[in-house]
Image (spheres, rainbow over the protein chains, first blue to last red):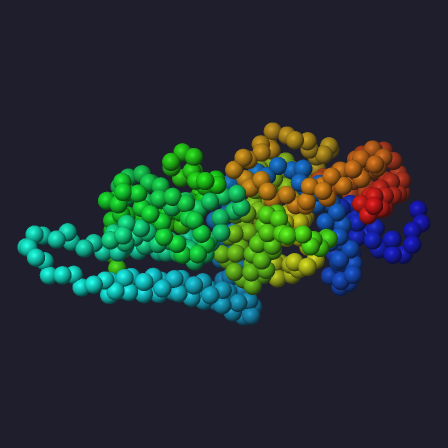
Length: 246
Length: 193
């Protein structure tokens, strides 16, 4: 079969993308793709042409432990990393993340401070009736170890709302992040869905207000759109954090 | 890939979000890497499982694939490849590498077998290409002769080389090459129509 040279080149790209070449030819095509951007582009075009074939394959969720193994392998890689440039970038990424968290925390503390100072000084009690003790604002830094998700959640007993400030959050499309309150001993109680990627207030149901206490844990799980159908977390818990008083 | 002037659909928004995450992975951002994994691992695992037909091996291939994603993401060019195609191609290559190293491969392209129980919790909207492109490829594949389409599928899913395809069909190597090459040219011509 005779083909024009440009067809010959495109056919080699097609054969390479298809994976039909034997090992030496494949290695040769790899070298060509590495040195010749035009050829690499042809290979990419063929990958895109074949891509719909991969859509025939149903997705299958891998073992949950696989993510940890990949992470461990990467930690090892980071340890061996000698490329200062790449390391610097990671530091930058970390700083960005820390800055985001700090900004959220600072905004939060400021909000809390303003809230406290802005409030009119409590009038002297007219009668010695014991005032309900003002309860502290509770804050949880809800973050995944791998920093794939990070939220600051605070609860102000005075207005019975919580402020949810996502710092790093993006549930997979078709999923929602659901907030859970986990008492020191007990099962998770749903606090509703994270409603926005911007800081937002959510009402806390009256039945749960008494459970918002120091040492309770806030957790975030990935759930189908609209939230857990069972009332308990059904998807992976991506981040947790203990409530502390501020 | 064509440039679309229409308002971005959900699929194209997802695609840009994934492309952005992949670019961040290229800058060494582990949290972006976690997002990419969460978003795509079921898709990529399905591919490895289909090619290798064995869960353990498929997981090993998937692990290698994601480590490769971490190492190679710097070279990902959103202007040139769709992110999910880039990822899926990487996973497919890793699975085929393993298949070749193993020295044995399924004699028939695997059908929908028992291993592939579709996972209802997996994101359903991560199709690699638009439905339209999928239909076009299916139509053009069906226009090929059966032996051409069969050989192309066997190579694509089974990592079969020309020599193996020729042995399987009991035809000379040169004949097989010319079937496949003619098929590829017709495929391209059909997809351009």
